[in-house]
Amino acid sequence: MPAPVKLGTLLLLSGALAISACKTKPPKELPPEPGAPTSSTDTGQLGAAVPGSQADFVQIMAGQDTIYFDTDRYDIDSGDQAALAKQAQWLARYPAKRATVEGHSDERGTREYNIALGERRANAAKNYLVSLGVDPSRLSTVSYGKERPVALGSDQQAWAQNRRAVTVTID
Image (tube, rainbow, N blue to C red; front, side, top):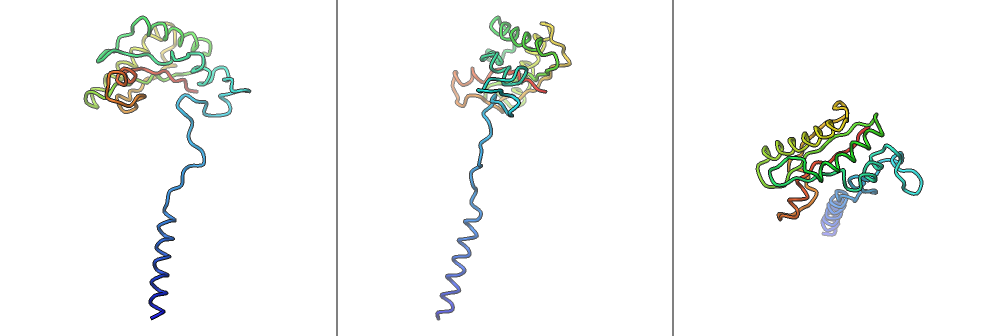
């Protein structure tokens, strides 16, 4: 009888080892936060942003890289105009930089409706930047609809934060 007990113990231990080998391990390094510098070329000494980088754009814009919309709307109001004017000035300073305008919506409505609304919001922001002198070939748009919320929740405050257009510079 000692042999079956040893065999059972051996099988039990090998099963436990096999299961523990499947355990997922946390990553050694987490990905950067959205808007954070993605490489050492985005930041200089003491965390200062390199001029013309995405980090520089976010720093200079101080929150004005994003414009917000009312429910089911995509019109550019006076606050949006000021933010877009500041973006256009930065883009004029760096004529080789391109940008993508991302359109977003809140969670209400169908996926298709929100993709279309996000596209109208992104295009409204792009068209306003073009009206301020930014070459349209430097700008692209993408709509994420309700797929990339910045605020989680199903209340007015979260919805208001998610109805937005965000300008992101690209190389």
